[in-house]
Length: 134
Image (cartoon, rainbow, N blue to C red; front, side, top):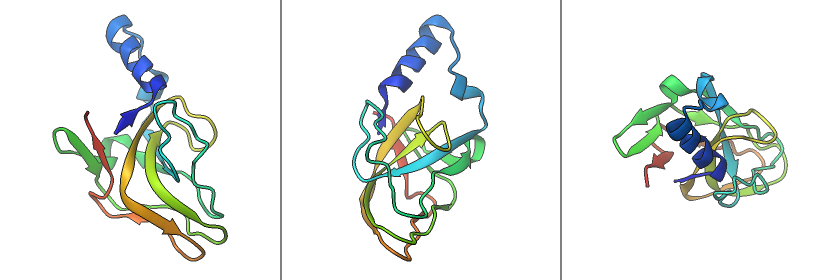
């Protein structure tokens, strides 16, 4: 798991200056898929782009199961079905917006490459996506 530089900075501001990050108050966050590690810069350059793809909304209070140092998705997460194009997906990220630029990102690697082509709908069973405390 990797927190973006923006997330790390917002966390420091929260702890050291008492400035609450704007994204913390929202009840919804979004999960995005990537063809490469978005890294600490939080780059969206490798976000999935097959036809039918969109970030999915999840509810913060119920989306993740706390396993101590590992959080896992608590329910099935289904993305749009591919109707054209293809992607070799390797990473996911938790972001603060449905589309466009993000101010907050936590990313992780998928357990293996997920090849998406016409007719395939990426989905992750409960426990398939892990966010680890480093």
